[in-house]
Length: 357
Image (cartoon, rainbow, N blue to C red):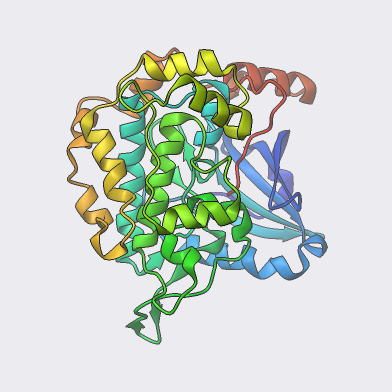
């Protein structure tokens, strides 16, 4: 349905830059079908050595077919520009949604629905013989009905020459921005290497990020972060059962944990309580020894997902008073479009989306 003629796409408003500023993501409308899409545009000569990473990601996405894994409609070159036509994620990434609505983390039922979709996607990915290697809130996107994993630029296969490679050893490319989420066995860079279980540890870090509104180790120097991970330190979901003293919490805020008033933020954490099931889910993911860490298939049966049976991401957004924009009501003026888009979906307060497809 989606063709290769750029004239058939009305690029309405720029949403964000991506891939270190080499790409631009637009809200657009496919004119023949009137369907709204996201368009990721690259100037090919700016990509240089990174072009292979873009192509590798697109190759992976063509190989995957799962409702919780990002796909793209088509890709083509026009003049010197490379275009990817993708489904529109109306709520952006989980990081976007936290920045705009849930600064201290998602409510548990909504969080559980998101995690269920991510685990479903991971189980499929691992069964196909792939490791994602970059699970984090900014790589989990939300449309009106489900969570979808993106960020496959450093995804890799552990199947080589028709058989399974026992362990991988190299750090993912561009991993400096993802150190807080990487598993200890990935960071250790030793002869033991790592497997798909490293994604499960990254999921555990992401659970804390989604629950607390900030990723663990955000105020740690890389060397200290690595030392703490290797000795088995597990970050916590912050609620009334785990919140540290006011003095310790204030020090964490001052060290870069967040920008909010420490007293108010601590009070929010201290007034809520996550279920034992959610705490234990995070603990299972964050087990230091990968051989003792649960697989994605095992996590699918975890009790934390029982609360998802009679609700959905759409229901939970509605319960929080968050509605999807009606893009058909948007007019043609770009400045007006930008204001309407921001007001109806995400009042970013000047921040940009993090659609790192």
